[in-house]
Image (cartoon, rainbow over the protein chains, first blue to last red):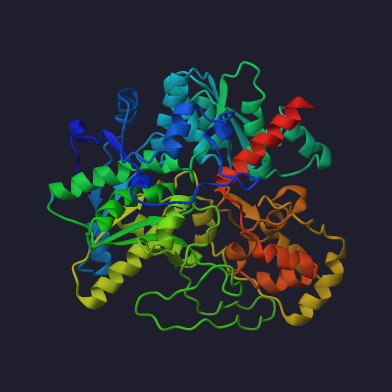
Length: 459
Length: 91
């Protein structure tokens, strides 16, 4: 029987996080007044020990023993060879993945939830708040708070609260209190409900509630937490890549390509940042954050080309009549969309150290299905973006006849997010097209549809 | 005749920000004050011509505002929300 996984011995677990801010320059974040944000500006919501990490330029930061004790429940995470996928693709590439789905909440999120809960505890905090959409982050924080004896209040966007009873159950099993946002617990929630009692909620309202709950606690013992984007979150996630480096060394391998899906950027950063350090120090390696393909008729972000691709951007084809298949024009979008991406990840893309890639929804679903039917684990929907790019690279390696080494981050399993697969398999993701005549007729129908108001600029 | 707009409003997909299924009608009002989500074009363009649809539905000003929309830096947002929360708590 061939060895499938590289298991890092428990005593080899990394004991320091890698801080990429030591090796790249970034503009300081600006406050709404246009001036650089000061640590005290964040003190109402974060403990100072976390704020220090947020702004630190120290290259290596010790991982506290109590944090390692909890991470040891599932770490070091295995580095596994996807040999069954390789065989299915007929590729000479060697594909490895870090499996982050073995954590109790089922994703990479607790890699930062656990240290955040710890640092808050050490600082004297007793209660934590956060917002969550469908519950993945709320679950991770509830789990972490349970292990450090903190209370956890999660404001869950109402539309998701109604759809995801199992995520709510997870949070509550771990002692978290999950409430639908907007709620009557905060002024922000009450204001939203007074405007529309039937509102489905939004992330904006949920985050406002979570922050208000932290800021308004008269005891001063409540703080807020978030699961992506910020520097300290990226820092905590680097345990993924640091483990991977050790595991690759154990089998005398080194990646030619690193791949991770990039939403807020934390799981990508976790795997990639330690390898970015290698690249900065002269190592040849391609590093790809993968996003969904961007809308081609909007020019809000720079477009590039896939390597070797000479396809041109074309306008969208005229719409077909109702019921016919709508075919998007061929488009190759490069350049991170900068839509809520971690600044550190955006900076690396700007400097050319990482190369953004984009995949379509269909490519992603197909990749997820193929993975499930070869390697077994049903991937989380966001993980399928990375898988789609892995398959593209493996097929390219096959065309080129090259034994490329591909390492990617399997950010989580999808066992609580099967709705998308259900719809895909039932053909529910079919395209919807309108003729110009039908579009004109619809205008009158939409006359009373709410029109958006101009947003207040925060810059 | 079946309402085209009702059909479009009921189209569903997974929201990458929430992590769960939403209808297009939710994406139209997903931000406070009934504003559309900044990802609406990127999320829906593969399913139907959302750009053309919204050009028909929105005023020119509103459409141009939406197409240029980018979320502000997270830290900037946090500081702003902290100040708003402190104001609400005082009052």
